[in-house]
Length: 175
Image (cartoon, rainbow, N blue to C red):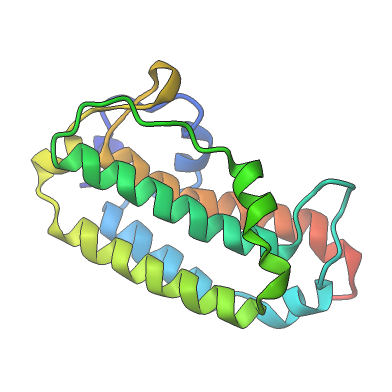
């Protein structure tokens, strides 16, 4: 199913979904996998622990955020696809980032984990039927979403952060 098959664009997540092309959700995730595989790791390593403002995340923090977000949303996606109607609990990304201690890891290690998770996400989406992709779930604060929209959110979320890295982090070093 394609992005244009999303019946109701979920509030808040639309900002990320809009960064994904109107292709199948599996193709969108495969494109994002290729973008990860071709990420400019050497530039990111040169940026190191620099941030563009006080309180902002490092590149390692952002990569850990991708990992944590994918894990949290894969639970939500799976639960909804399997018919779970409970309201999903919120995800405090700042608390996760604070406690992940991404500074202890290398960029290569973070990327290895992220690539594995994205590949598993693609496999999961390949297993879904059209009906499973369209099931509506209950997000926190009354937000409604379906696995289809959240799959595009994952791909677009990555692009959103890649754009921020390019615009705000690259100027910190000579690229």
